[in-house]
Amino acid sequence: MDVSHDTISLNRMQKTIVGIIILVVIIGGVIWLISTSRTDNADVPVENGDNATATSTDSNATTTIDTSATTTVSTGTVKEFTVTGSPFSFAPFLLTVKKGDTVKITFINAAGFHDLVLDAFDVRTKPLNAGEQETIEFVADKAGNFEYYCSIGTHRQQGMKGTFTVTE
Ligand SMILES: [Cu+2]
Image 1 (cartoon, helix red, strand yellow):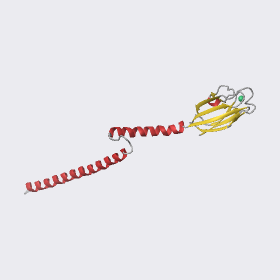
Image 2: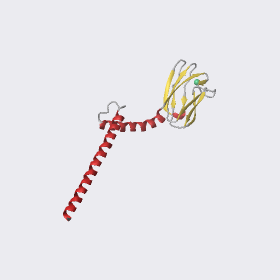
Image 3: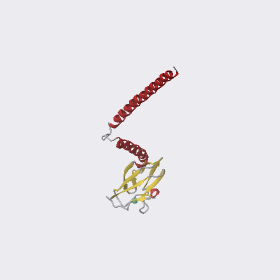
Image 4: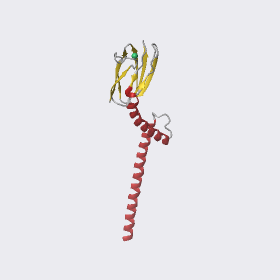
């Protein structure tokens, strides 16, 4: 009696355990299928999505690039200006960029003998004759209002200056 009762309960336990294992396997399989199909879907926009390792490396790389790209966007936007010099003014005389921008200023000397100097960022063109031009490039790494001017003779005192503004 006791033995057979034990055997029955063992059988029941075994069946229950086997049932649980089968359930776990089925659920695991379904989860695996779902995750696989999601990976496949995610791979669709990526051209070479065959290699799972390469794909995950790619997404890691994308994440890394995104992070640095976000940083780069705020630090790496290129702002280009053309400033024309003549006796005794700059046009335009107001330039505005954002902090972190890379700034390119092409100074075109329309008439006379002039340069363009921006001490705050330690940049200047050579003194240019009429018809010449030169481009200076720098990173606007600090915010504020800074004066640019012509350093020839008394041109600055005569009004040959402008304001370079860097906003936060
Ligand atoms: Cu000048």
